[in-house]
Image (cartoon, rainbow, N blue to C red; front, side, top):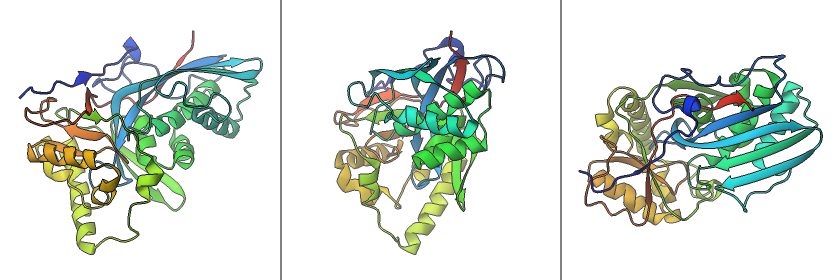
Length: 329
């Protein structure tokens, strides 16, 4: 069944690549570079993420092998921003830039003195498509500040990123890699990481159209039937087991009644593609707030006969390492 061959999205940095290698093996450290190292610039490589994964609304996330790469260089004064790739010409190139705002917020908490900053962004994560581009930007800024301050990323770093972005599932996935379960305790964001089964082979089906998270979230009801809540609880628990131990259960596990049906008016083509894939026996769900579709075919290949309807298929292996920071030089 090789009717659709997704375009592979592989690592671009050699030792900094993640792919399916063990996290931390042969790559720059996640977070701090060592206090007193005299580092005046860092390179940050941050992965995309998918969230919700069916009924795991605002709770389940997974890092994907599609990366933005950013260079942060401390300079005597001013702010200079260069953006290539996704968002070039669209995102602001001043203090309003999301990466800069996250970097400033993290730097203030860490007591980091940065008189001036030169930022170069090489973006590969599609914007406003449900692949965590905003969370990746925030995580990149937080990670860069920690790297320049000689600090490791920790629960406080996740707290800052999640407060800033509002999506702990995406932020934790981009920060720590693998798959995550996120939750809140009062005003604190928490997350635990687990490693997906080697048989989990994500394919992102990306349309040309964009979708705003705040707009699709506005379609959600304030209450759902108890039956649907019970369905979601069972399916989200099953999704964790399927992702970590038995991918054959993913078709059942990614079924959802909690958010996808209510958001369908925002992206009918996305919903049609999810249904078509499920009918063909492929696990599929809306990625984040859409409109991208996350497919998890058993062999990484989509079956013949499924009309993608103009969606671009990208093979995006699970990123196990999360954000990585290296000295710039």
